[in-house]
Length: 143
Length: 301
Image (tube, rainbow over all chains, first blue to last red; front, side, top):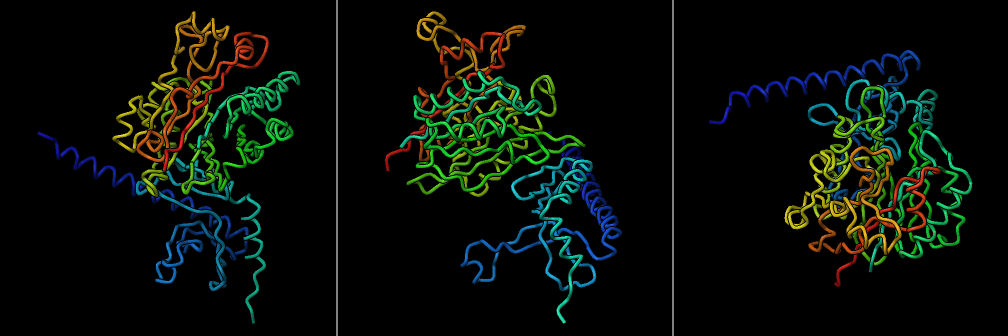
């Protein structure tokens, strides 16, 4: 007879591992933000959020069903109405890893915490990301 | 309409040693690339172990005047890719490209470079992924990195299939693994069984299972070419064999007759150019890979 009890236990173990991985990924972003908060004097926050795809099927757009995707973004922490900057596309497996960061024409498949840290460090050094940070640092709300 | 594709690890400029080759070796490789483009009526040429300098020189070659040379080596940022592709401009248009990098711990593994081509007179794209996986000096046979690379390459294939189950996907490169190694046969799911690949579209077909050794007996090969070969890569210090089939072109089932294309098995081969093979067999130069090629024929509409 098939061992359903064993499958049940394996499923629970997988769920625990996935939860642990997702918490670890969130902790990496927390640490990133802790350091960016200091460097930007509390002006910038980096987060994962959903964006609407601007280049998709116009019929879907008319129907209000513009497809969405996850991205790593930078926002002004104080002026929350300021337009966010999309820094890179983000994809995360349900089990946490690998998570994929698409930065311009490069796809990084991050297999663990150290890999994710490496990819995010590379992202921060990208000129287009630096430009986004520069604009957020110098953001002035319209009077 | 035919589309002919060639992959060649030139050994000119490995990523750790850019521009390692002497001028005469470089010139020979450039000349051979041009001659192959002409003689084999190639449409798409992918080259490994080339530098930005090599790509720039290839652009000046008259034999490649009808080709666009895309230098993937100088666009690699912090990771040293060593690839370039040349494609016939009248037939193919590069619509997008992406480097694929796997990060594990603090290490970077070069998964490959994806090129999406539009084809003149055809309404679907060809997705072409070129790889040059780590040498067995750095990751031995069945090393976990090899499994990881194959699983991630399979993920990329599955992502394309999730949008179009009948997508035209071509994988080419020097995998430093043979068709029977676990990475390619099990993790990438590149089968030797053409009929099964047709029946089960998620499988890939690897025609280079046929090219683990010479297709002819040694005497015929010698009589025809002057040199026999038993794979695409020559390793003179080999223990059991000096030849390995590390260079392969692998295709989705859409090229097997059920889709829009037929794979021409008779023109899918390791390319044996006698004067070049002679150099590969010698120890006084860097050349150690023979080119491999394939041809697809568009089915009549």
